[in-house]
Length: 136
Image 1: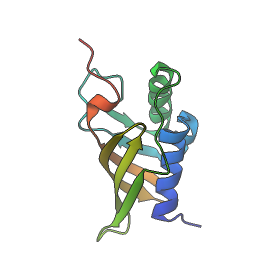
Image 2: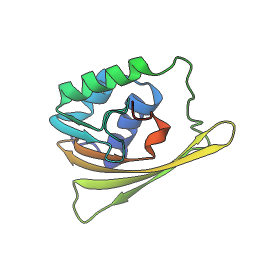
Image 3: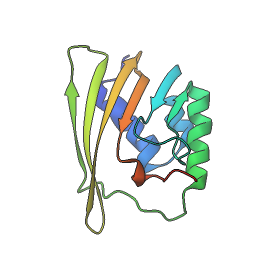
C-alpha cells in the first residue's frame, strides 16, 4: 500500500524535526535516497548532501549528537504547512512556517521526489544560519 504525500511528509517531520531520530529519518528514504540542503555552506555542522539511506543515517546521527541538549523546539500548535502537488505525481512541495517560542517564525520550502512510498530525493531550502555556521 502506497503512502500519501501527507503521510510521507508527516513521517519525515516527526522523525527529524520533532524526535531527532536518525534511524527513523533514514527509513523515510529509499535505499539510494538523496538528502540535500543546497543553501548550507560547505563546512557547516548540518550536512549539505547525503546520498544513500546509510549515509543519511550516519550524517544525521552525527548532526543530532552535536546539537546542544535542551535546544529550542518548534511550537507545533502555532506552526503550519501547505503541501503543493505538481504535474508529476511523484513530486510534491512543502511550504512550511515553523514557529519557535517566544516569537520567531522560520519559513522554508522542501521539494520531495518519492518512489514506492519513500523519499527518493529531498531538497530542503532554509536559511543555513538556523542550524549552524560554517567552521573557519
